[in-house]
Image (cartoon, rainbow, N blue to C red):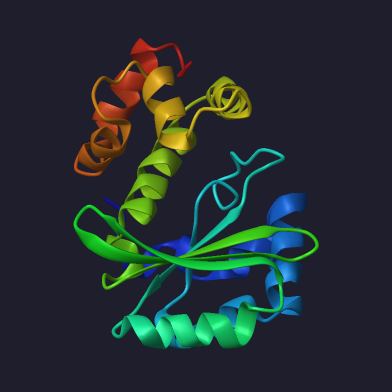
Length: 196
């Protein structure tokens, strides 16, 4: 597992030097001060755009940690309510109270995902780290296969598990891969024809 100190995904600056979509996202985040407005909640990007498997309809996921749920709700309302498609809801996911704020800028759809956990302990982050390890070790055909399955309507976790022939609940299965070694990743990719 990669140490958090050296993890490039923790600082959004990597977007500035990324692909055209990532650079566009960086400009959007800066223009509308989206991360700056969430600074007290440790905003951390997750999802498909950071790891370059997004499709035309992908939204931007921002993981945050709250201490007091109503505090996050007030900040979201104060800062984002005037954006298009604003909504704020509460769900219980894996027994945790999860606050979800959605809104759109002219260029991107955003989803802020708040839990009482550090962003780097939330499932969406762990899934992204596992997915990125597979992408880093696989050939280019793997990334395109994932994209095509996502375009056909599959969720990201399902697309990975289908491509890698992994059984069981995709969300739980990817969590388990967070504990596996690089050799196990390479062996599975080789077995499925995604390593040359």
